Amino acid sequence: GAGVSQSPSNKVTEKGKDVELRCDPISGHTALYWYRQSLGQGLEFLIYFQGNSAPDKSGLPSDRFSAERTGGSVSTLTIQRTQQEDSAVYLCASSPSDPEFRPQHFGDGTRLSIL
Amino acid sequence: TQLLEQSPQFLSIQEGENLTVYCNSSSVFSSLQWYRQEPGEGPVLLVTVVTGGEVKKLKRLTFQFGDARKDSSLHITAAQPGDTGLYLCAGPNRDDKIIFGKGTRLHILP
Image 1 (cartoon, rainbow over the protein chains, first blue to last red):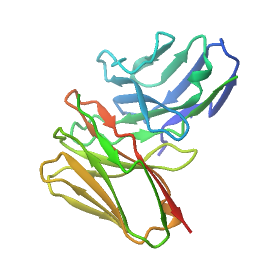
Image 2: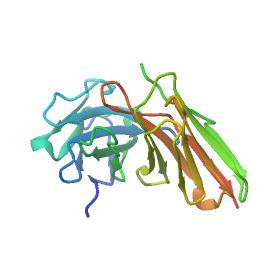
Image 3: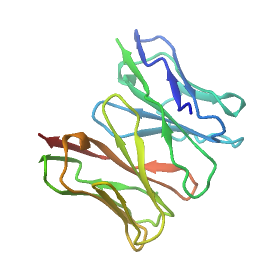
Image 4: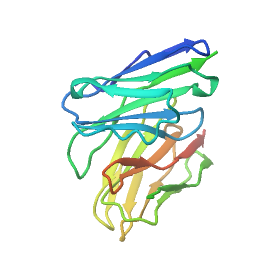
């Protein structure tokens, strides 16, 4: 079956521009996470959506970052007025509602480069 | 705050050697997951351990969950270059949010 799909796979933009990153989760998965991964580093949590609950935005690094999830499915991560330090791979993961296991299924990420 | 600490941070060994990497916490987790991430890809789930003391084997990989469910280990026997990657452990915190350790970056030299 289809896995988690992220687009674009690569994005190069100039400093100060806004960017939108898209995540199509696996159908039926209620949880959706966004992470940021800098070169050679681990995963930095950004935001977490679970069903119809208010999202956990505690990982967003600044108010330039925002995310929404429409209809409990597709999610977009928006970065306004991009800075060079925003350059990283942005990963999306979705997981089912099983409270015990909740394995995460990751997309291959969007590699964002800010010039 | 529940944290998962992974060690070592980096490990480079020769093909054919054995190795163990660790995932530790001061908190109890209901389950722990191990993922492997290869360059240019997202992490892929290897295993979930649920029961204290549980041991799971995946070919040459052996995963163990500590008796107190505060730690886990991953042992690789006769490492191969294909085992190279970033190994991440993860588990649900008290708010049911999955948290990740910072990972062990493993490099197997041919």
